[in-house]
Length: 264
Image 1 (cartoon, rainbow, N blue to C red):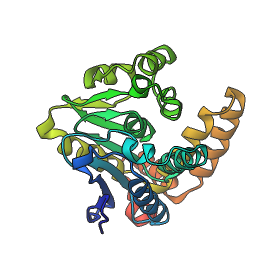
Image 2: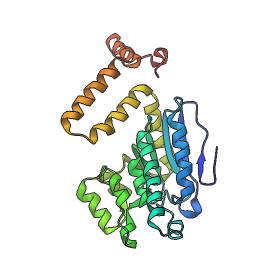
Image 3: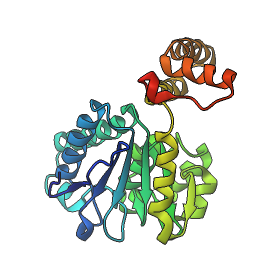
Image 4: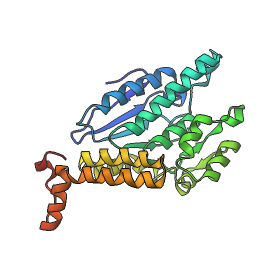
């Protein structure tokens, strides 16, 4: 399936789906059409239990240059901007709320809301040539919405420095600061992301889904409530067929048969 703004490559038999931003000529800027297309696909994937991992990639030299500034400038009104940023925020939260891991495959620059997109993905792998910035401040616009995601990935001072200077950081710097999981040469980027996806697909979907939901939930609460929630989640997880099979397999000194348990 494809639209003018978003290309969905065919889902492979393992349940790995790749969403490719396909506005190379516009540096994959997040136009309203792009945001709509992403929202439609994320909503659809959220209800498809065959899906195990989602990869967000991009065509061309840039990963994503943020919002479409020409489109934004064409309708300068508070109501329009509030609607646009709310639309973008909903799409970003849909990534976090998806029951399967989402991996950003970053081949080029990711700026402003594009950097936010990388930060909102659960995992991120970048080519060594990729660069990152929240550069709205250079235009007189503090990247407030990207700051929400950035500050939940990077240490506060590192995030704030990026936000107030608008300077680019390299992929290696982004790795050191916690925005990325790994940095690889460009020619093996897709292979590295695929290997990461395969390692996730090998685990029970139900455990990943429960764990992802808990992971983000507990980050936004106090530590006592976090432990209480985590304990309840683990208890529910432990009663699932996949976990029961995994524990029994460990006791039996064999590999778990999650396919046989019906929960793989």
